[in-house]
Length: 411
Image (cartoon, rainbow, N blue to C red; front, side):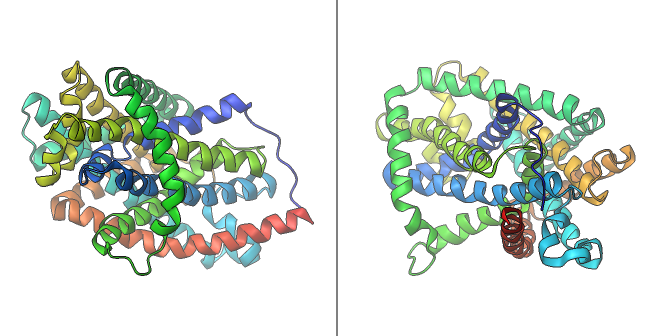
């Protein structure tokens, strides 16, 4: 029977890095795509719960499964911190053989291509912002330079380690994101934002069963174009985010874990959407502002954030902060993802050779550049779906294995 692992952090120190991850993901939750989704309808009531659906309980439940399985089997069962360890109740000693190798290889590819997809999308949005503010050409050359720059900074952060590199960059990102959030609340439609948070949460809770059902849908374009892609993308990200959360969750009960990893992030994402999405919808419905709506017509979602900020005070400064946030987010994603891939390929060792870390970080950037030049956003989206599907099968088996492990621990 696994023993209870002692807590590695006090409650405040434990929640803080999880909040950093929430704030980073919630900002690059693709604010552009959030605003685009909301702006496609003049009625925020159906738009908001549909958008929250893609960023609420469902994706964080995926992360929670991976994180809980890794944390339980690593800290309580004393197994290596790698994906294969979560399958010990199902496979026994075979996890150290070919079955385990296949599981870890699938996790590496899912993480690698999920991050490469994100880097490509990030380059698209950052390039659009630089072009919008400074008239810098938004061609493939600029995007490639940005990916190289992001990868270079990530390399420096990877070499500095998790506590020195990733933590400092994440803290900078969190502070900037909260400042931008507070600014929009203060100068935007404050009461509409507050009302939108509670109404959006209520509408989400009441419509989530309908949104989760794929039978008899008359919006197949929305379901396949948005929901299917997001589910595959979240699944591809699950080894990365799950291992990050597991590494800081030592000693927590399952109840504490579920509340802080499932409920708190969902509420945080609803807040982000109420602030940024609610402001965009209010501009469109009340003021008749067509800036964000035009990005929908032109299908340039990467400009939606900047068009929303355009009519607020200090638009130049806040738009520049938005660009910095997007870039720093992808730096932290790249270096954190490289450390996760490095840990998996090293069999769960935390301190793998430096050369191995450099290789994976560099390879992520090269894959992103290749996909971007080879097929643009279409190839990035197709790859996320292609890598997410096989790992979805791994996740289903992981749920069974985790249940077996927890049952055995109770006895």
